[in-house]
Image (cartoon, rainbow, N blue to C red; front, side, top):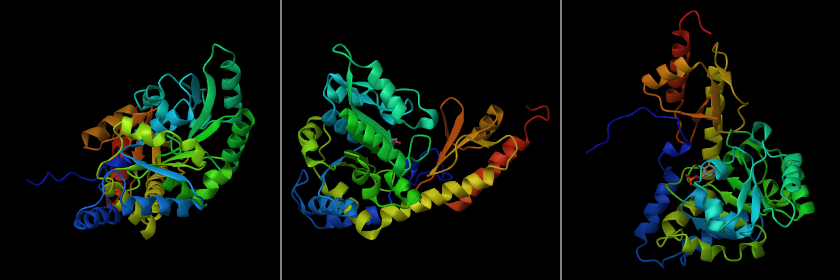
Length: 354
Ligand SMILES: *Cc1c(COP(=O)(O)O)cnc(C)c1O
């Protein structure tokens, strides 16, 4: 039975289907017939090699099913159970993973200094270290930053280098949650190496799902010695896909075809188009500048309600901001229609507003 037609929604970038490059690769990997299981296959080797080539370094590369698993298992590998991870107070690992990093590390804490605009700063790290020192405290072992951040902002390369510098000074490992890593690369126009190991990042959760794949995120350790135990944790956590080729054949294809970057460029461009269409509407405000594929809007609550009544789905984050996210498949017609509906909803508010 065909599913009912619903207009395209922008509530999240994982509402999107899988892009042709990813889907075709799955079909081809299936048509190849029998292949070794649990990642002992050619696609998995080639996908790991392709990621190393992309990053211009011999990294240790792993594939898991979700971004939560990528973050939690990477952090558990980097952080002893009696230590802590410093992250921003709006970090996905803090707000949206049901304590998975703490659970898989077996006792670590997440320390979340308040961060202006969702970005960690060297001062915030210093403050955390001061507060969590001494034999009884969960001493920080890792810093985790999200690039782009949960509210759609970017750390500049200088900012990443400055964070890495203080990490190095204090013996902390630096992890990057790159659920939307491709969007950050597309926006900054730098190399993947420049945004990660060259800047001092030790490990990366590299998002595939939100970039246009059906399933599967990668974990990249730039210092291979830091990956010790990661493979074992992956199996223990139920994150070792037995038909691994259906994750890694799409990864290989996405990188070889350039779709990983094209998808992100499209997503970012759609966010900018949408922001341009709504930013001049009276009583509508961008909560943050648009720097990646996310647009956060402040608007009257009644306007949000009538937008929902028109059938649009979206989440309200950080107490007040309606979030719209654009994926590889975002259609300009649909996002223009959304912008027009926002305009109509705000225009129909009672004249006494605010
Ligand atoms: C989506 C997302 C993840 C991963 O989420 P999963 O739903 O587990 O795949 C991790 N970090 C950030 C910032 C995200 O937006």
